[in-house]
Length: 328
Image (cartoon, rainbow, N blue to C red; front, side, top):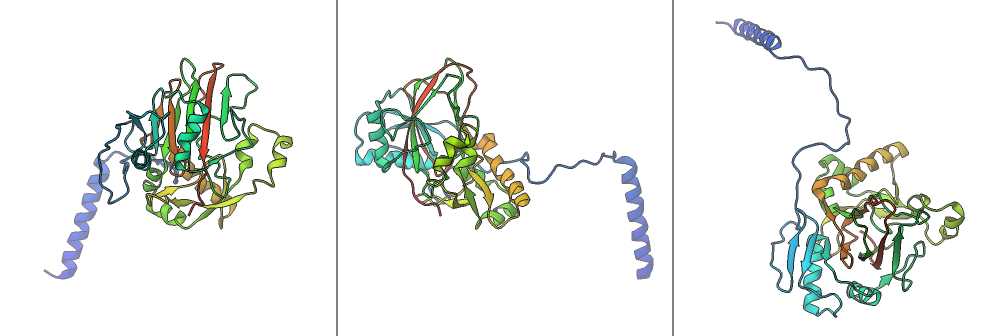
């Protein structure tokens, strides 16, 4: 049999098989999902940096609240000074879980500040109302005229050259229902980006500005005097954690305005994709507050979202922020 005959027979067989398949396979209507969205499928949920082993805690009990982020700590009285060993173990827990919860501590403002000082100098924020001192921010929500810094995923003060390292938040008064706070793991958000997107952003930088986040609450008269104090700053789109070495997505809807080197339309499209990563439930933890509870989070590695679902009920919180370093 010649090669020409063999090729002819193979071609005939292929055509017959295609015709049979067309006759038996149902036709599907055209369907298209726009690119650069969030899609279903397996998530990579890696809590610890690669190569780091799980270790037990000796000085307190840890109750995980989600897969990669959030742990309730029991057996610690935050009103008392921390020993060096306890501070070191709490810091390890913070790096591993990114946000720590302590039930019913009922700290005074002074005690709350002293606990936070174990991680560095405290910073002030002149754009927000204060409590007992300039470095205690007070959120008293209930009156209709009170600005509501809620319902948006964000990382605190990324409009500063050195955004806060972390924050210690205490709920003084909680509504009967609602008023939870959520945190998102931005290391997991980065890990789960498509490889081509990671390649685009790994060495990119972005502009951060205080105006978009605060323009929702204040008019030009209130904001204009602060423009010189808070000019736009540049941060990496993906920062490296200075202690754990993890790579983390570092853009947020409140303060990140554009990615450098891209046309506005391309920057906006890419930022929309990156903003969405905080919305993935597998990367989140949600905390239901009781009065006197403390949350201590790593502002370098997380975003958070205060849920405003409690109507006219009163919710009073006080936050102390710890000064941070320059992202790299």
